[in-house]
Length: 405
Image 1 (cartoon, one colour):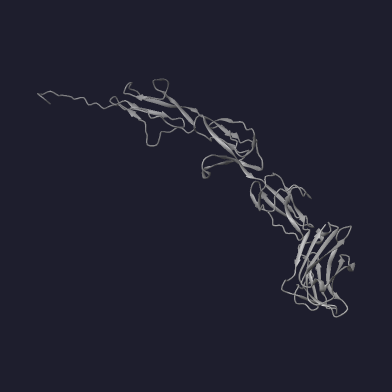
Image 2 (cartoon, helix red, strand yellow):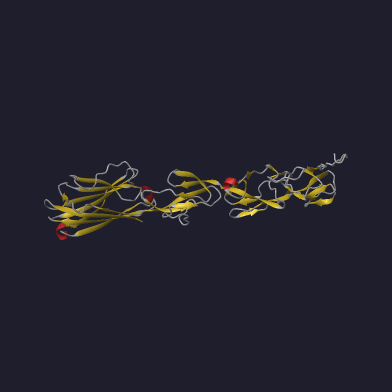
């Protein structure tokens, strides 16, 4: 009270007006807020734009906004409650099916989609020779890739407006069966291989034959796909394949006796005999060519086989050896046996005057002819002597050369 008078002082409180929002499925960025009230003394405030996955913000609508506006500033006037609504447009994107892989052919149409629109992954329309399709993958690091199969239902693959989802075919090499036909009896070997992978070719050994390589045609001796020195192969046939071993018959063989050994031969039935069996993989007990008395040696003829010999009609046998000492005649006889057991004893005989040939190397050539093919089991060389007295000599440096014709 002042001078007996009452004095009243007005007290004012700011009226708070509310601001409400409808974000329509959106949200504000992390750490950001928009005002929920204002007063007559509030400073202007710019509204933070909301965000929504798969949608583009088109602006605010609401109190005193005539058209959608992305930049709204809240001021102190007019003094009234306000409401703002976020407006959105759904984004669109395209699924693109990319060509990938060697010699890939075919066609796939792109699929345009809205963000929430669902579609079905179509069947693969591409073909890649030698490979099979196993699915679609997204790009990027392998650990981050996603895989889809034809028939999968998909949506919301890309939130960016006008974005692109690139899908790439996943190819796996096809598996094929490679059959290696050795063309010896029923010997076959099968392996499962993958297209364009490297495989080791089998090692081929066949008695009496030289391996010429692998052919893609049965019985072919001209077209060699893989030569003997080729140890590995990459198969790109896109199908099962049979490779046939191609051989060339070995038509010559040489036997050389031990040069340090002399064979003593007389006309008193002290003979030296060499039996050469064809086909070394048989169960014939061999002796070697040293130390027997009487000297009857069983040996295998090197390299030549029975099946190779049957392809030829004539066998030439050249025998060379050295004669030393004494007197009389040195005899060499050829006998042979067929595979059916027929035996031809003393089929041919050669003789040399020991006195004239002392210290010399002599040679003789024999021929065995079989019109229907050489069906020999073995041939035998018999070294003997004859004369008017006790004729004898030493034979050494034996060499036997055989050729098929």
